Image 1 (cartoon, rainbow, N blue to C red):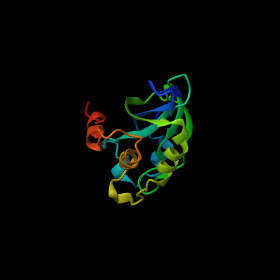
Image 2 (tube, one colour):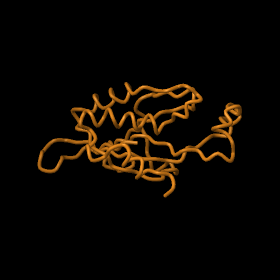
Image 3 (cartoon, one colour):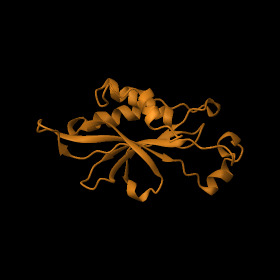
Image 4 (tube, rainbow, N blue to C red):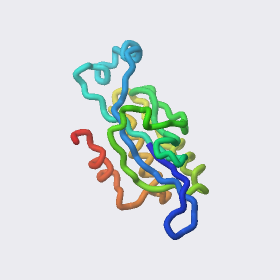
Length: 164
């Protein structure tokens, strides 16, 4: 998730949003398990679910309040619905976070436009998930200067690995 706080970047006098990548354990509702019971690869009780990655932009002086940008759904039926107002302190499943860049206020619309344009793979058997979407989004954001070059995807994957 990305956090966006309105603050002045050091020495520039420009308003900025901080960008933080968070991960959280995927929460699967009981009803959802019943509805997708034929998707054994994802529903099997012994199968470890991957961490859910999303972007969070802090939009308040309260560090946990902001907008989430995340892939929703399940394999074969993923979708992106745009920004969602959230308070991450109420999530209860935040396993970590990684600050990866910043979004100047004047580029906020471009940031949202880039995330809307990231392709979604809805081939159920591909093994593709929200982490793949987030990594593709990071490539697009990096190309536009939102993410620093010293944070290549392999480094981000290492920092957010699940075996910690």
